[in-house]
Amino acid sequence: VKIFSKKKNGNKRVISFLGIRIKYKKRSFLRQIYNRLKMAVVNTEFYHKKYIEPEIRRKNSLKHFRCLEIDPGLERIKGFETINVVKNSVTDYIADVQKGIPFEDGTFDLIYNSHFLEHIVWYKVKDVLCEIYRVLKPGGRIEIWVPDGLKIAKAFVDAEYYNSRDFESDGWFYRNDEKDACVWVNGRIFSYGDGIGTKGHWNFHVGLFSERYLSLLLKQCGFDHIRRLEHKECRGYDHGWINLGICAVKR
Image (cartoon, rainbow, N blue to C red; front, side):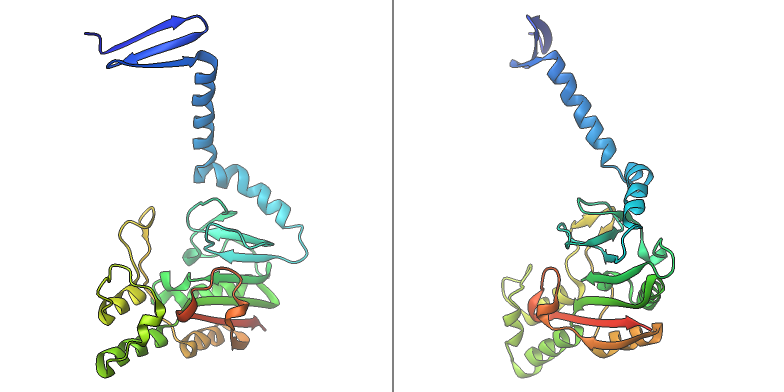
């Protein structure tokens, strides 16, 4: 019994494997392989950084008003350039901002990040904020959204000591069918890390914030006019009940 066979049938080819026959046109088959290989190369971070990113930089350098989003989701905020540690469908620049933001001083007018800082280990957050300060223009603005650690902690304490169920209004019960407050607070503070992420950059949280502490870090980096943002000012996805937004201006 033949396991594998291949034969011509006019301008077509027929492959038979374990009794399964596959017909294809030679040219279209080769074209499919070529297109798949081409897309594989184009989508690599190396190709993007070497050939695509320089042109993106050149075009954006001509803008009068520049906005940057750090760690974007899968949808681009209109008018924003994007920087991410890994490449996704809306990534303009690939870089780990913990090691520096690869732009000159005073490049951007506005820098936005949503639920990014909690993925930076807590003792490096100030360095990242100071780096953001560096690449902002004088008078430039930063907008930050993070989980409200104080609100999450209070809801947990109220549940444990006073049998409060206020935390249930959050509506987020990942791996928590029993709606236990302790499981909930673990999920909200540390988040989930079971295979979600790319290249080992799992989705665990490694930083915790309150409005006071985040405002203090911004002040220490040199920011002024620090205030809390309202939910309606969120430019991307609003995480709702736990969302804490802070904005500040570079002196």
